[in-house]
Structures are given as structure tokens and as C-alpha cells.
Length: 131
Figure 1 (cartoon, helix red, strand yellow):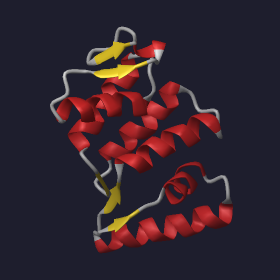
Figure 2 (tube, rainbow, N blue to C red; figure 1 turned 135 degrees about the vertical axis):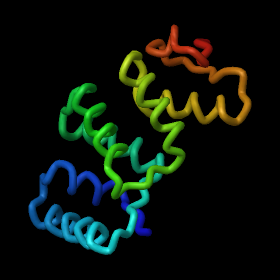
Figure 3 (cartoon, rainbow, N blue to C red; figure 1 turned 30 degrees about the vertical axis):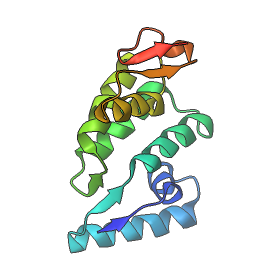
């Protein structure tokens, strides 16, 4: 198994730097050929969401589609996939960002009664307590 850094994943997804995108494509094609899974950590996914929104201006619906596509590909092994899927569903319907929902889900899984926050976007989100 190989792991990807965020910059390689972003090059693969958006092809904004043709030379680097070609290298990323070769790495992933090699993994496909060898049937070698590619690991994506939750940190990489959070960074990817931030980069797609802040640097490439992608909308929430576009980012949701990217995350769904990643989760549906057999090539990728996503860290804590069930947790990521739950966070994606909250992100799709809620006002917070993906990382917020992932933070809340991790806290919940660790046995926390809630996640306290100053983020008003999470005011009505289950598992969060607005301070």
C-alpha cells in the first residue's frame, strides 16, 4: 500500500499543473496495475477539501461529489472510512465544514458527550455545543 500526500491527490484531481498531474497519474496507474491500494488519511481529506474550496473555488456540492468519488473507488483505502462517510453526510446537509463534522465524529467516537465550539455554523448540529 502507498499513501498520498494532499498535493499529489490535488494534482490528480484538478490537473492544475500538467507536469505534476502526469506524475500523480503515473503513480496511481502503477498502483492500479499492481492492485496496490492507495491510503488516504483523514488529514489529507481535510486538507484536500480546504484546498479545493479556497484555492480552486469549488462549491460545497462539487466537493461532496469529489469525496463521494474517492470513497467509491476501489483504489483508495480511506482512514476510518465509516467515520468519514458519516461526516460527509453531515457536511452535505449542514452548515459547517467537512473538518468540523469530522472533529465532532472523532470526539463522539472517543466517548465525548459533545464538541464545544464558537462556530455559529454548528449551532444546531447534533453533537456540538455552541459557546
